[in-house]
Length: 441
Image 1 (cartoon, helix red, strand yellow):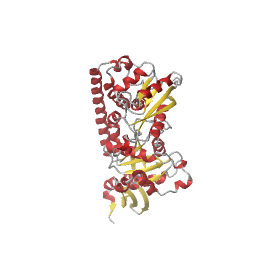
Image 2 (spheres, rainbow, N blue to C red):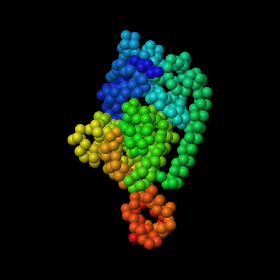
Image 3 (cartoon, rainbow, N blue to C red):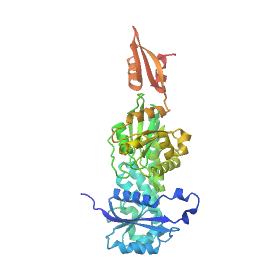
Image 4 (cartoon, rainbow, N blue to C red):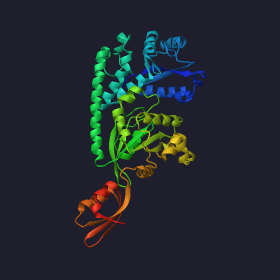
């Protein structure tokens, strides 16, 4: 049965010019209209019906209610006539602000962090993902226990009510603290298991390529296009959370592992970044990152900057990248012919020049230019480099012949009386394995 949507009002705060006059303020504060539009999309992804939005302009955030008592009264007069059930704030609310707003407004009060946590709780499917979400939720709830009373037991259902469960929300700080410690220990075990699996993969060796990007940039669609994995891909934010790893074959015949990860978003809650470190280690261990950007988004530059910021936070800022400019099928023909180097520099700034980042304009949905992207990945993947080599195999060496056809791009093959001579573009690991059959130049 389909869930009934909640009538929701979203609220943002725009700091006035006096507050934004400090150095770098414009860089740290996103455009309020854009941020609220994104919040509306998040709310709709969680099952809300956004019926209105409120923007409050202030020189500073109000420590008691975030938006000031006058604006609170304005919202209060709208709740009953418009049948508002939920009010979602674009800023993270302090425990005091949350408590004061709940006392004055006859509606459920959520902030951006709690909304994102709710979406993560809905979408996590694996045991690992559920552990990470629960840890993030408890870290968020712990400082908000004092003074909440029965409000902690949200039994009515709907947005913001999923999570650790009624029992956890009614326990005291000590019991929640013990649960947090247990979750951290379990996630560390997950981390150790992933480390063992990663070591086993690296022993093959198979390089790992990580898919990263802003949420809804088309990562899962690209993942499906490259691997045929059938991962859920739709327009909802955070449609897929749990990491998926699949093997693909590059034009050089090298086999590599492609890992799809959670999409990033501006103001991603710190609790989530911390909780998902075990998953994000797949990114830090990758030999190459495919940074997927929705080239049609009017905020593509800002979204790219936020992804780069999170990559820096998890220690992956120096990993080589290929910029995948996705959704080219939605671009006008004239825009498809624009200079890729100029576009790359516009999105990445000096980072593009310093790291010699290459770009590829593709459509994951239609498959346009995917072959060129695979060629570019082959060129940029420095691990297990490919080189041309001549091999002379005795006719009885069927295993070596099979390996060359399976893991290398065979250029030519010539049979003589008692041997077969093959020229192939082969990765270093295969050239080392078949070194006894290599013919010196």
